[in-house]
Image (cartoon, rainbow, N blue to C red; front, side):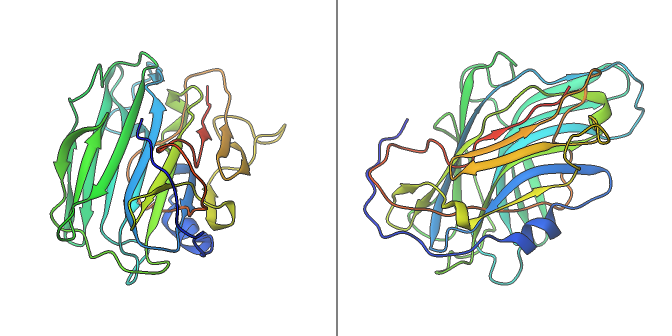
Length: 284
């Protein structure tokens, strides 16, 4: 863990509710995400969670996309569009056919002209669902507008086409769960802890008032049952809980279609990236 002492004044911003709901919206993909705007220049994003076992049933899904994705996304410049170039790094599990599946971390750079994705092999057992804790980070380089991507504090790549970081509420940081084909997947509880780095290189937590969330399935109840529901609770600036339970395997996060979002900060002496949005995902 990094140890960083804070010293800046609290950021002032607002929750990006409209951007979060517009970006996290599709018919076959479902989200439980927090979206935040720090309200100040942001030059880094950090998240941590465990490699939980994500399992699939044995139904033959043919060529249909069946995925569970848990990721951190940083959008350095949203001045022209909430869907601007961004960096995404996280844990991905995917199934095709009856028994073929993959599991492991990867990172993606999305730009106005497309994107590129790279698998991550650094760190200890990155592709094993052994409940080991892993860290996901992206930090702007000291010179220019590009960002380095780190997994377990190992540099695994750099961007090439990110936009310049501006002042004010012109950026966003998102963390959460995305799922496609929830009826075929089982994902146990996932706890995400997220922070962002200010322009003064101080790690900060997000202020609750600056956090929006997008939950695109109804709340679980007697009339809405898994896999067609989420139970969520944003308890404070550090806790966002999502619950989903069901008997056959089915879980959240899925292919990449549309969603991007973020969260801001407050100030106190604090130890490294540790806990702004904690997302507990559960879904049988």
